Amino acid sequence: MARIRKKITRKKSQKTPKRKVSKRTRPRKLSKTKISNKTCKSSKPTKFQAPKGTSDILPEDQRYWERVRGIIKQLAYAYGFSFIETPILEDAQLFVKGTGNVTDIVQKEMYTLRTKGGDCLALRPEFTPSIVRAYIEHGMKNRPQPVKLCSLGPVFRHEKPQAGRFRQFHQLNLEIIGDLGAINDVLLIQFIYLILKKLSIKGILVHVNNIGCPECRPNYRKLLVDYYRKQSRKLCRHCKERLKLNPLRLLDCKEEKCKQLANNAPQAIDYLCEECHSHFKEVLESLDELEIPYILDAHLVRGLDYYTKTVFEFRLEDANILELGGGGRYDKLVELLGGKPTPAVGVAMGMERIIMALKRQDIKIPQEILPRLFLVQLGDLARRKSLKLFEELRSKGLRVTEALSKNSIKSQLKTADKLNVDLALILGQKEALENNIIIRDMKSGAQETVSLDKVVREVRRRLK
Image 1 (cartoon, one colour):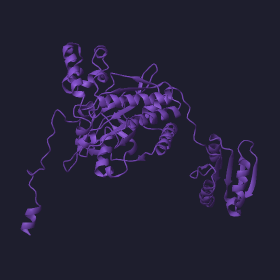
Image 2 (cartoon, rainbow, N blue to C red):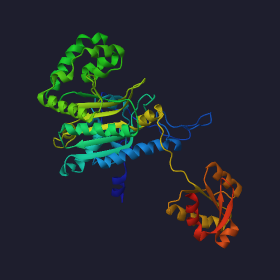
Image 3 (cartoon, one colour):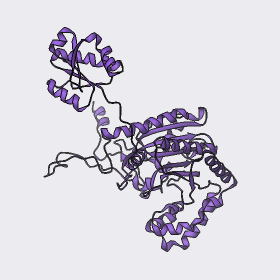
Image 4 (cartoon, rainbow, N blue to C red):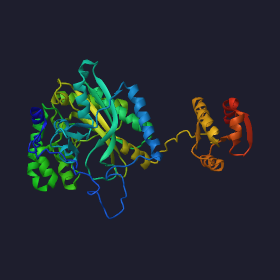
């Protein structure tokens, strides 16, 4: 017994060793403050609100979301995409390695936490590394290639909340993995363009560029660094850091003085290898064939380390330019994360930004089909019969609503009037016992008693 006790007794000094994370690449951590009544005690009454950078999707906005989701699903199935869902929590190193340890996402925006078992996890800041991880883990290379995958869901980034920028937001994500063809780049551009066109969003322009591959980019990178080193005094504070860590990001700085410098910087398309040049030529010719308007944007690089060759963005070109999303080719990422060399291309779109564009352009979204019947009841027996009748009406394709928790016929009819229904079906104690129901025309006030067995047929006749 003493020997058993000795085995299960742990000394206070014995602790699970913690993994070390480099300060340079250490992502932002979630607070580990222990919550208790004493910790949260305040002299002021608590007024709970959604956390900063998050928002509620209210019932009146759901029609926008359902409209966008509906078009996405319709096109996804038509274009041969399969839906995939990955965990919101992933190993933090997946994004450090996949997204890039010198990107803003990893250095400044990623939420991480350490589990009780010592694992370092992250709330996903983007979809692509997760999708690639799933592709490798589940042996999708053995499926017919390319594999086309579609995801919809929330992502998390610790950003300064502002118009169109949130800490929790939702993305549409499309990936085509397992094919080198430039036609796949164009297919994704066409897919997103069709979504925006079906939503009647106007003023959409596609910005495209080619940032080269591991064969030709090093030479271009050297020329870019040489150019900016001569101008380093004119760079903003962030760009001075980018010059050391990620020179391509110098081209898309939003500071005015840096934008002026970028205008005279070397352009990647002037230094492409033969393969990249041929690939990009096919992309542009295909866009011309499809009559999709685009701008050749030499400053477009996208902010993620894994991109190669084609990169593109969708922007709403009006008084205030709104970036709706973008993507590009990432031919080395599958190999980087432990798979075999596999070419791929992907795109991500912000759902909130699409809906913002719909509202900005005052595009009307059809209202959901409203109920035309209201079921009124009085008494326990009538309430029980109403449940059965409600399901019978619904199963026959009739839009019906109710207020079964209310006992007053007057209050129920008042609710029916507010909902602007055509007919009220009134089931009182007497009607329940006699197996009848009263049909009331809400516009004229005329009433008629009919048998419960005939109510569906009678309602259909009147609603025609």
